[in-house]
Length: 448
Figure 1 (tube, one colour):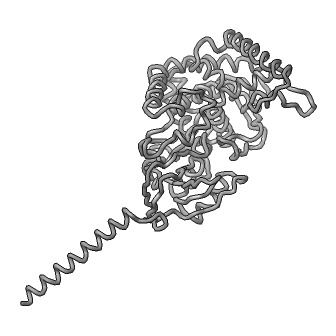
Figure 2 (cartoon, one colour):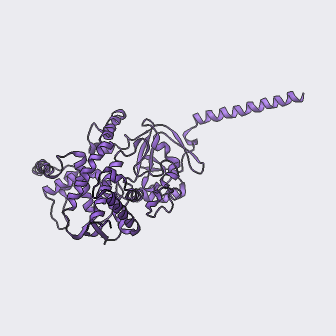
Figure 3 (cartoon, one colour):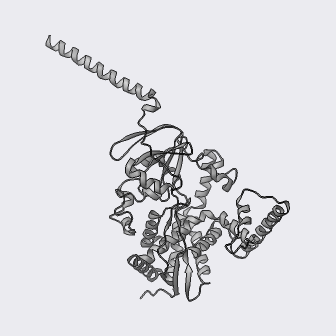
């Protein structure tokens, strides 16, 4: 009797447990939106910008939270523990196309965000082919020649805005490597004259017709200097060409930050100089892709500058399906379909539980034995994004910056004479405020 009674109670208990589990499953499937484990909501003052918002809301709300902006809900996923889905999800789940439509007028119709995902993948394959290792070897030779030619025009000593100089050199380098031989030097100048002629006709046509358009060209036409002088046609053409190469701004600011930090931290400047001396003892004055790959100290210095000042403040996706995330302290949140999902390299790269003393410039954090960019798991370091949509130009950028700074370190002494630059957090990219003035003196690096 006792055994039968126990079995009955056991069966009843199992039935109740099964009923509860089924009920919970059904509830989860049909759960109304209001009952989902939605992230906490914060506020976003667009006048303050995203970085100020993140600094205010992250300490209060944690690594997952939602803000309202222009009638859209943006859910932020901050830190490697909650970012895996952001970087690894398929395009059908988290899409770039909807959130980056503003780029279509810049890139033109029929490319990148103006085509469906399958075509875009084909186009990304073309980029991958163009940046294969065997092609990069040829690009390095061109980078070195451009740097030698550009800096040969400097005097034996002087004062320059290194930010300005690097911006112009990198446009020349990118033009030569990515757009072909016809672009730089004499043929580039001839092409510029053709562009000047085209823009001159447009400018004159608008002036004669009294026509004003809501575009960048019109903005440049209407611009005036502080002394009241209007821009010339040649200046308008130059401004437009600069705008066309705005994508290279990311490489130029990284080069600028790298130099500024080296000139501020003598211990790392001495370390990269010593590395250059050792390579010159081994290879002479030759610089190619293999030699650049041996510049580990310079690489870490560039990487640390990129950690503190990644090219983009935010990365965005559009959520096409519901998904869930779990924070490092075990909280679970449901992210609804229709939310814009965002992460911030500029903020995530300074998380103290990922990077020790995160505000400090410390290239050795990436050295063997520390490797803080890997210690907290995948997507700890996201200066170039990651996962399915990692930046294809990352190897090119490192080679470009190494080629430039190896030439500068071998041929000049520098002194930073302006205050250390401030970060411009309000731009679309993480910019450099004001000029970065340095005093230079030409000299050949001695290997003795």
